[in-house]
Image (cartoon, rainbow, N blue to C red; front, side):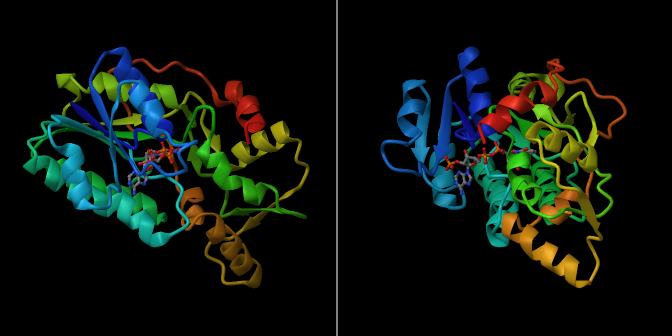
Length: 299
Ligand SMILES: NC(=O)c1ccc[n+]([C@@H]2O[C@H](COP(=O)([O-])OP(=O)(O)OC[C@H]3O[C@@H](n4cnc5c(N)ncnc54)[C@H](OP(=O)(O)O)[C@@H]3O)[C@@H](O)[C@H]2O)c1
């Protein structure tokens, strides 16, 4: 049995589809939020997926979810958090509990979803947590693989959702820092495919896979692209991210209401840095521009 943490999320749902295609038995941990009409649980069950209901920040729930599983794919924890404590809890503390409980439970294979840009000294707190979490996984005794995707999209694009309140500001759209950090939006199905193809691939053990889309955008280029698609004419204004002046403070407040770490995330690269790597699956080569119109219509 394979436990998928985050199996109801954007990436987790795509992972489940690939697991189902290969007829791998899967179990999902979900908080099962929403009322009974909109609950995701019946759909998951109809698909033949086992469901454990609970919160992954509770070690007892993790123990119950891991029981009987030989493999864990950790794709849980929303990328965009507006509460700093929740951010640390889901991106770092959970991984500490999870690696300990997985070891006790006899899990052999562990695939961990991190982020491109995870780094010890990152300007983004979340990227620091992601880096610390990677170290916990590397130190664990099971066969691990770490997957580091750039921002991914499918029917939705969470990175765009996080930026949207800023793009709608008037009379100027504030951009923190230089706006020259790089992102490589990648189709979520490509990330899921790499994860599932890694699962029983010996060559994937102890590997860190970087996964970016075929086009690299600076934040400025990305904002311009979205402005074009959304027919937004508002000009951009650069705000030094470390400036103490009044405008920067106001901007900081607006951004923090949107996402506790957005300034940090917009200031760091989310692009592939490894010179050469052989992924266990080929990427589709699909570009964000092919999907952006539909994503924006769904907003
Ligand atoms: N989105 C991106 O562009 C991006 C880029 C790079 C890396 N990542 C990483 O990829 C992973 C998945 O991201 P995503 O965008 O697919 O996430 P998502 O769509 O926001 O889904 C989050 C998933 O995590 C689960 N979850 C969150 N908190 C939980 C809790 N306390 N207990 C149990 N389950 C919990 C949710 O389950 P329920 O709501 O059903 O409980 C849901 O399945 C995250 O680790 C994220 O950091 C994301």
